[in-house]
Image 1 (tube, rainbow, N blue to C red):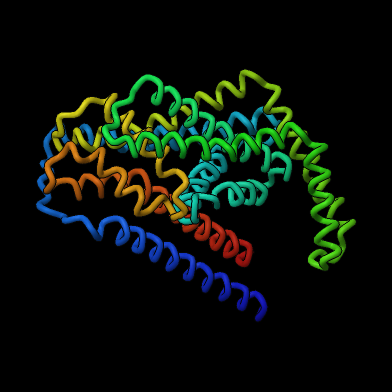
Image 2 (cartoon, one colour; image 1 turned 60 degrees about the vertical axis):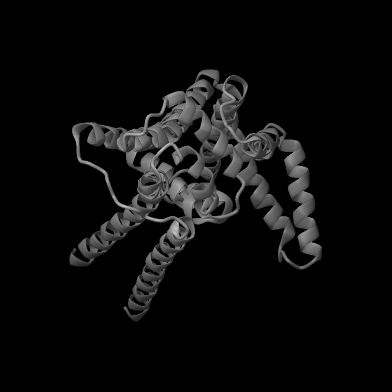
Length: 349
């Protein structure tokens, strides 16, 4: 009993720390982004037109989360794993949550794999679904950006344009490497075996042979699941299409925010400018590209009167960044409450 109480206290402490860290990240990011911007007068009128475009911005958030959720549902069915909308949604949302609170957005995929594994999915399926979702997501942005770069050169500043080209080139390296390694299991096995042996000699790994066998077993399971997805051309096309839907919804948000405030802008111009800027800031090593996002997107929001830029920027960041943190924290909170109720029900029995 005492051990259980101590475990619960530790969980409560970690939960409290987790919440405080989230609040600190949000506060630090907000200060970093908006400290140099003058708020001005909030002149947003609650007209039908303004509320319509506010609703469109919110709809973009719903569409992109649903698109990412549907990707996991399709892969669950394809791999013969349990199909759960709740788990698929939580995996998609928590991936964005960790992308927003970790440097360079590098935390999403490991936590997605862990989350799927905790909910009963095999190691191979958890890894294959997460990496397939990541590769197709990045491929969707690369295709969209290339299309915009070729057909729409509307960005006024050459510095933004050329930085976007370079950013997209570097951005493409990681998904290309992951895809190539996924199709070369023998090469990956040799690299992993050599790495574990080296760590064993350096006494960083206690039992290198057992560790090698365990890791290679997980790798075989991953390649088996990944091959099922990769060989299904219709599945890959659907995943890529849903990734394009996700990216289009995300990059449409600035346009609807600008229209909400009555800015005279065209969709294609704002959409193309947004693609350029996302390509420019994608490698900034701060959570949610904080700081760089605000500075770069000022180019998009410069179509507004200066006294309204702050509020437009704030609303845009709420929908494309802070909302993911709130949703992720909400998922953890709901699951914590459910876990407590389940424990209470078992004790009553």
